[in-house]
View 1 (spheres, rainbow, N blue to C red):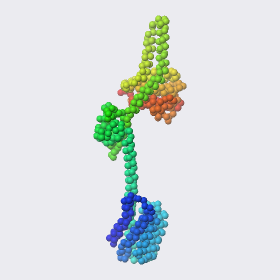
View 2: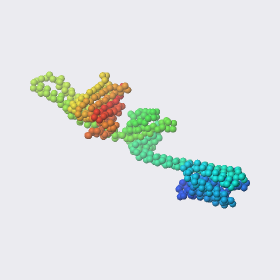
View 3: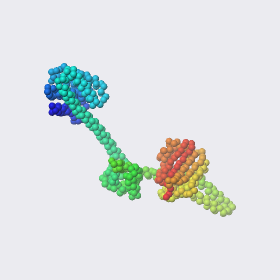
View 4: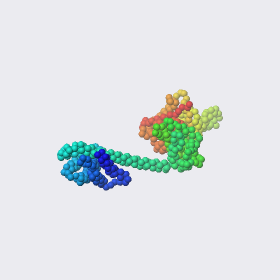
Length: 538
């Protein structure tokens, strides 16, 4: 009997597996009325199960109810009814006792159809459990109704266990296939996303003008973007296996290497500027954003470096810097001319007096006035002509006082007074004198223009506890709306009618080059505070 069980369950397993396997060969093509066709297949399958049923001691064992329950649970009542109809015909074909068979079949169909209205929203396995429970109740009822249980009570138990074994095998096969199908669909969607993402990245990498380089932990280059050919003239074969630092300007190699080493240790992205040698031999200015990438052990495995050619931008900045200098000189020209006119008037007057009265005792006064003119013109020339960047130890108080003296004519003409608060001990910084003077001139000029009704400018210079010095400029002008403060320093962004926004942009660049910072605080109609922080000289 055990052998007959195994043979029937094996055939049952084969029939259940066939419709699950076939779609994998036809690519899961949608078939019209698929549920109905599956119901027909299951019906034919149940018919065969009845025909191959085995007999022991005059009792027949078959699995026809297993496909009916599975079809009702997975495909619904219509497909289940078709399967049940085939199983009924098969049972009538092999049995002489039709009446209890028909009563049992009708009871099962009606009960399953009604239950389907209430169990459609629960998972298939729970639906099967409910349907099998209902089948047991109906089976027991029919057995007791026709008083056939007394002949061999154990037969009915064995028959129910046989059907239950077939249902369990069907559940395992179907659910495992469903899960595999879902996983396969997820994998297919994932593969498509990966392919699409890879295609997009390849499209970007191969067509961008930015230079993309991937550096591994051993400082070796694992990827060069094709843009190196267009920007630097190198093919991928030219750069493969090369030591990157050999093509970097000797003055920038130390900074470049230390930056990479630092990123592997501190895990923070950084921006650097360096010069890279073109295939033709000249140097190209590059600005790079370097981003560390973590590996499986939370250690930095790669650094992605995205660079762009800023040679033209550097040239433009130099042109803008010179242009801004000339603009400042032009605006100061009127004040300087006014300032020079005063000593010239004195000199002219005394020369006329000496010519008329033969007085010669005013040489010291004339020399003093001429020195004053020379000082003013020297300051004006220092702004107008290009200056080589040369860092020197400078007394910051003297530099500010020198700048204020240069702007004194504009203060007078605009009815503006200023106060300078400085600590008694000198404050020294390392800087390029003319560049910082340009910053102070720009800020004070903006303050003057914001105070068209006159007022006071308070300038404060002090040390900070962190080895820094702070220079603050507080005016009483019309102020700036708070939401616009973050945009100050952007090129071509200005609140002045005829401004260009380049002055503050250059100020920001100069302060950054001196490892400092510049911040703004302002309220409308209450004035603006500009605070510059610079490191003290060692």
